[in-house]
Length: 345
Ligand code: A3P
Image (tube, rainbow, N blue to C red; front, side, top):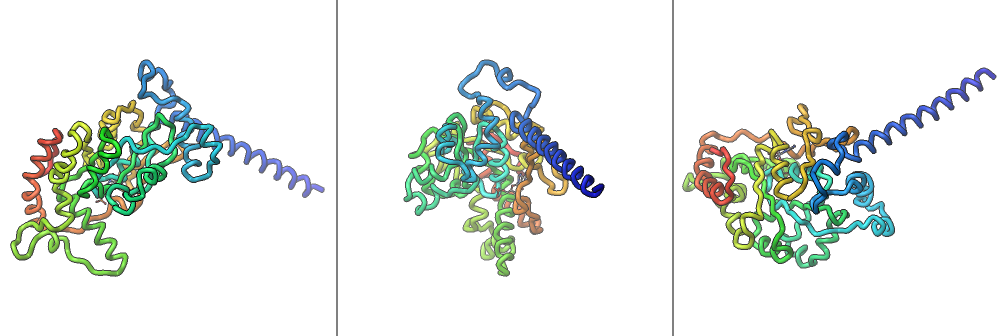
């Protein structure tokens, strides 16, 4: 009898405990998603009178919960219709540069309640087969969003692919274009490291960076090597400028995004005409990863995958010096065109 009573009591305590934990988790998640950035600051009062740029509170409430479900494909057609969700063509594209920090930039911008990211690289404009499928195919690849939100995609191959500027121009001549750059030699080594890792994964051998970057016949920089060519930013940008005015581009400092992301993100918010919503709260330094990670609310945070932030192989200093000297005049031109100067050697 006593044993039965004890079991009943344990059962009751278990149910009560589960209910309490469940409610607590619900509250925590809800407070976080309502306005995870500045929970104490009323949204409507923060940016003066409501303008076109403002985001209704409704969007904040739903961004992390409902939209997440829709993206996972769990939404019914009825839910999509009820919430006026649409798949919109991007209003801004991160066009490059490969290894500049494109993933970090996209994920960090996605912290903004008015931004919805396309998770995968779509490769619509640089891949002829995809491009032939038409703009509706591209739109269907976009995530669901509210009409006042903006969709952003990133495909770093766009920056260096010949046909892309014209194709994007044909889709939207007033689109905003984001380019994230790093010191060109470091970027080239990062590019090499990614390829090297791919070869190692397949148990293949690969050349040393020095051998690829320097032409053994002339002992000069090998401009045929793709990792070198991609780092000549000005050459690629000049092709884009045949279609878009420089005002439609925003250059992000990828080296600063690593060490001090917030000011870089605030510049992007401004460029995209978004109210400033990304704050210190959303970014925290993770000493184990050695990088900033993302905090959505008190429950959800994430760091980028381990493939971001690889250890680079050591490169001969004379090769580094040669490359830096080689990139120098191109960098000067890049500063001149973009109006953004970097402390690159
Ligand atoms: P490394 O692997 O050379 O360190 P991309 O996304 O364009 O491929 O760029 C990858 C680079 O993003 C990484 O290059 C890394 O340095 C940089 N990066 C910037 N911010 C980061 C972050 N918060 N977490 C991880 N990597 C980040």
